Length: 220
Image (cartoon, one colour):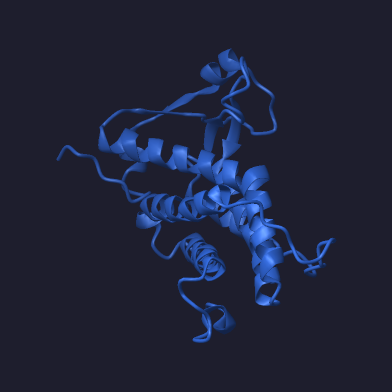
């Protein structure tokens, strides 16, 4: 359920803070619903849409001038929400395609790709966004915007961007009828180079993932 104070009729819907907060809350609510697994056939398309929309809010935060909070030190928001349940639910839903290959910084030369998990990334993004939402709901708007902007640059922005690239690639593989080279059995705790990644990559055929994950091929 949405927080009733987040959409107060006294708030200006054109206000930057209100729009960013609405986008962030919508992402948290939507992804939490997807993670319940009630409609597994829509998992990947739904996540592709939600992450894309979130990154529009992130782009607006990134293009905005530096936001300075009212207080010099960040106010304690209380206990952080536990993201483990969300992480585990997405890991189960995305099991055949959860692991993907990521390059952390495209401007650092000769950096080998590393394995990552969509489930880990989604849980981390929700945790970052929820931290700022706690500030916003407590009326600390500048603190919330500062946190969302700072963590967009430092964590949830790159994490969500990598996740979007993985989801888009997954949809493209299926829609273009291209067999998917998945990192089958690859552990994200391992530190592997290009050759190891290629050696570990398994072949997951389109028909094994298209139906369960809500994807459809262009060919019939």
